Image (cartoon, rainbow, N blue to C red; front, side, top):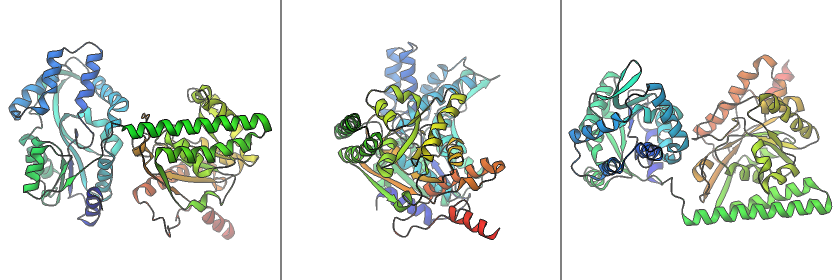
Length: 499
């Protein structure tokens, strides 16, 4: 069992309830590196930062003499760069930086630990010397309600460049955690702490269950002396040469198979057989070259009801390989319109009878779904992500109604396919596939035709919750427990027989 797996197991077996706190550092613990660097790069690109300021800022984490007073002085300079901006503008800027850059550096192991604490009913908080504006987007994605951060003065909605109190650095962070715990009636004698820096020793010491995360040497030395467990999170930003080579090989194999499929279709005029060949052979070869394996729970449910609308949670560009690989034949789908003009891929998607969705035009989007209904009636299955776009984290986004309308009009069931960790191998904006295993769970088919029209939104929300519940409590591959949802075909059939 890995150190992270052991930590997750300990949370599950340990005390439950809101009286237990779980306090996470931000920079270096929940994300790799420093969020402030993203802001510095932005200022450099826009010509708002000089080299002297850059040098002084970058050397701060490596200085040995940074105490609470020295860090407060340094942080004051950072606060001045935000002076004159409205709080709404600063918040919007950091949300934008999160989506464009910071999200790519999040540690998935940290996400798993946060979710484990939330499942246990613990009071989860991020405690950081950063500002709340840097943290809020990630906290929202993770479902974390509480943020303990360095406060900036705001006058009439505008930041004035001053600090409000002391930065949460060193002892100040430990004090803030203790005060928060007292206010929320949290028992620090049962609480958890997670951090990576030497300045976090005081903070970790106030918790009963401190954990070092990819620790600084001084923190590791102190932690070993006090028998603190160490957690190693895998780096996110840097793709290895092996991963880059595997990705090039995977795309090359897929492109070659697409060429072969289109050549076959040109000779024999059998587009469906050609598309099935690409979906089966091309994806199998591509995933193998990239070193990606697929474990499927309830694989037999992929074949019990055809045609059907397969719905998948969408985390990665890798998902295209995955859904073609597991569904294999007599499959089409709904893809974004931009893909129509991509070399090689666009012509293949047209041959495979994909529906191209213009997400910028709701009227055209509805019109684009009608061909999918027609193809379902011809016996083809359709794959679609009801989230509409790839998510930044493993969190399941809100479901749109399109997939469910398609299934109802065609008179076919919905089959939920839950993908657990594709985003770990290839993040939303990543271009490299990392070797590993993707877990997939196929849930019971759902007879959406039996839904009353006025309960559509409610039932769609229940289907989304099935995805959330499956991700939170992943079933065992052998003897997996069938879904107990009242939405399943069996339940619908029982209801009909008793009516």
